[in-house]
Image (tube, rainbow, N blue to C red; front, top):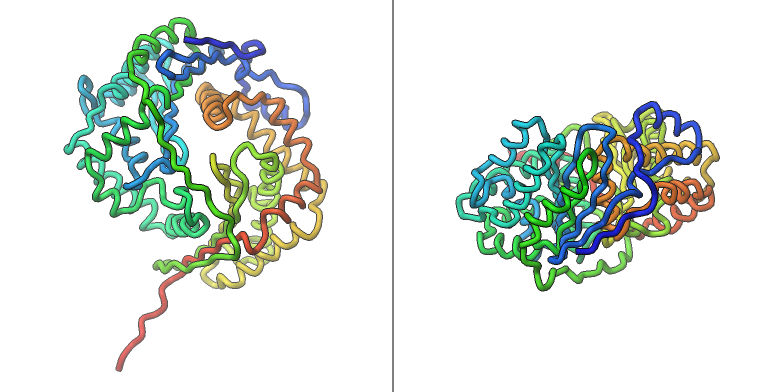
Length: 451
């Protein structure tokens, strides 16, 4: 077992008043995350520990380096396991994991993305040993049975119906991703295609679990009010006996360059059509990331952004307009969406939309816009220090996606260095028509009547 302690002292959690004060200044802020201890167990499990006793809460997070991008024959398996992990193990009954945590006043949940699956519990210090024991139990002895699969299959199918199939925004996102990504597994939905979820077999689930829920594919993060030494020892005892996987399979596909605009139309019964556009952008950690973040704030960061002002306030053609730069491990998308007013046309919204994109490519943004966008991003970063849960999330994401915990000062400095020229440059580089994919979600054409 190897243990390393990051530089810097133990920081303090920042409250709302400090965040507000920071927004008006550029003074240095103590970064508690730099005190994180990094330990590696003999079986490859990585443990990140940040001890801080400012508030009486500890956040335990287990990051699994497996998302929908790691699926092969059946889509939706990664998300299916997010559900199955709460359905019991050899020694814990169905839902008992959640009941035990909630009975002690804690909260727990999980989420699946294209790159990772994350499980978390936020508890007081005396409940942390129980959390460690419960997590180790379900990793070592999860109930992967026909009964469990059948139960959670129906839950996931209902979730898919409610979030995607019955929502125009869900249909739009499913269409844009399968349009923008032609080869990479980012093209399929995290929740999976319905037919895959309906037909996945227990043996396929077991194979996925064995491949990706191995200790050398896990990162455990604990931040907040706890004792680091005793917590690490308990994690070592409970998780140290797990066998590492000899190999973690990864999908080797690289998305080919897009050569020409792609567009599609989705029919859905609705009164307000949906317009969604996306451009290929670089993956997380790219040198242009901060400039793209600033650009996204200027274009679609709230009600004072260019797209919202133009489409909603000035021209009154849309009910809302939103978007942003979405960073993934292997790729990125710069996207924007608008809901068309029932008395407007989607063609008019698209024309106004493209006009704003062309304007930011062709003319420099203002100094005021630049400064405002930077402040919004800076405050968002400082908010990552606000709670034990936020700190644990930041630490886990940094380590899993970047291999290190990026100092707050480093990230703030990159934002502050973005210039007007940088914003225009990334707009010209990435927001070109031939790199664009467009989805229109519109009502189906009226059925023809026959005499």
